[in-house]
Image 1 (cartoon, rainbow, N blue to C red):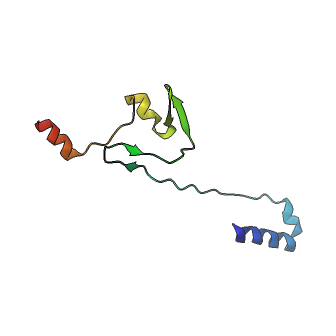
Image 2: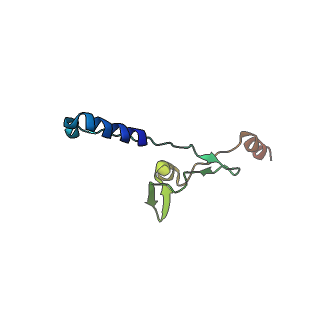
Image 3: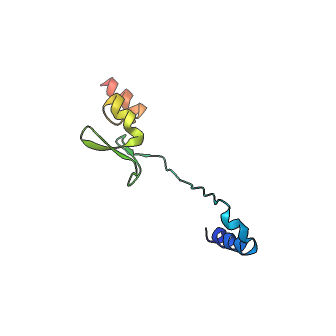
Length: 88
């Protein structure tokens, strides 16, 4: 950012008419996939910027379909544990 800012001012000193040209900015967001906890729940983003109020509680907006369709977070089940509980 610092070098781009410096280059911008350098260009303006060489070509003052560029002061009226539009300046374009691009932002980059890095998203980390959720971590799967040992109990099968997903640890979502820390300090989620898009929390949504749904049926009396705050939920992650990216997982709202799970609440809407299934009534809560969908959890991961280990296949071996699933087979073990069926055998009992």
